[in-house]
Length: 332
Ligand SMILES: Nc1ncnc2c1ncn2[C@@H]1O[C@H](COP(=O)(O)OP(=O)(O)OP(=O)(O)O)[C@@H](O)[C@H]1O
Image 1 (cartoon, helix red, strand yellow):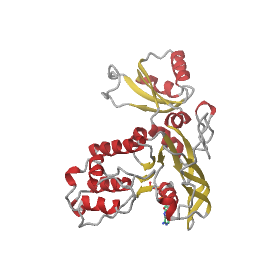
Image 2 (cartoon, protein in one colour):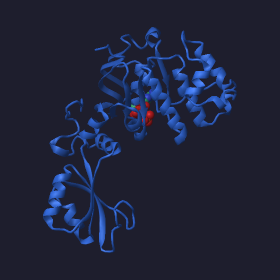
Image 3 (cartoon, rainbow, N blue to C red):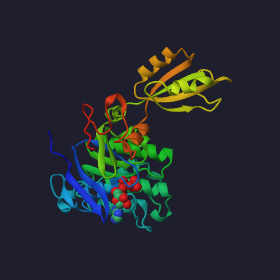
Image 4 (spheres, rainbow, N blue to C red):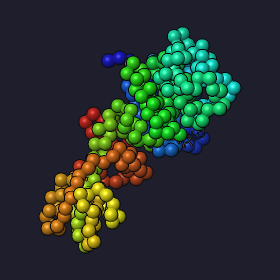
């Protein structure tokens, strides 16, 4: 197996009393596309700052391409876009790209950068006159100018509209397809679902889950059961074995083949074991219709994993967040 591009072993980093990272171990191999997901303050930016050599850990070791990230030589093949980037206001977009390219032995041409990131129309604009979204696109593009083998992106598409986000996603996919390793943090679950092959969920400075997207979802294998029942039967459904949160859809809301009638209610029930729930429902004799069973979204998985009381909560199928599924590493 090829040597890891990034390796953290037992890394702790504090800021005064705040433990931003707490005994984190993580290894990223060449060619991976990793999404770091976590709520505000989880420690994602701190993790990236250690990998890019901006900070050093209080305990543990961080390796970048096998070396110390604080040595400039280890960072030669690294490209990063922090959460906020300052651009020289009076330089034109093409000039900024050329300026950054001048630091690398084999950079992309300005034309290639402009094309990859859909910036062609802005080449002659001064960066000070760009919109927030245009600046963000340029900042991400600049991380790739030197053809880095590893790209670290901290919330790359924050503030971008849908079209700009899609252009950027495609640029990142293409760059990854060319063989690069990409690590990104994001608050957009949709972004992680669209891009990342591997998802690392970080919360309170710890790695809560680490696996491919389906295994992170399976860790909180909750299902949503949607069903229309007589309004009077709501309590019966809520009391079924395995029923979690129960929500009633407002009258007239879409979803079912036929909207709930006057004396009916359409319920969404979160269930660890949807099959058992449906069997229980049939056993009650409650007349029901338009039964649907859907998978939980990444968003639901994420909230379950990062909730402060997640460790204490009974979890589906006898597992709990913190217990490894087959190909899933969890440290909690
Ligand atoms: N320079 C600093 N001084 C003091 N505390 C800091 C500093 N940098 C980070 N922290 C604290 O460390 C914790 C982790 O912060 P970090 O920025 O890594 O989180 P994050 O997951 O990137 O959050 P966000 O999603 O909001 O960007 C937070 O409690 C934060 O307030």
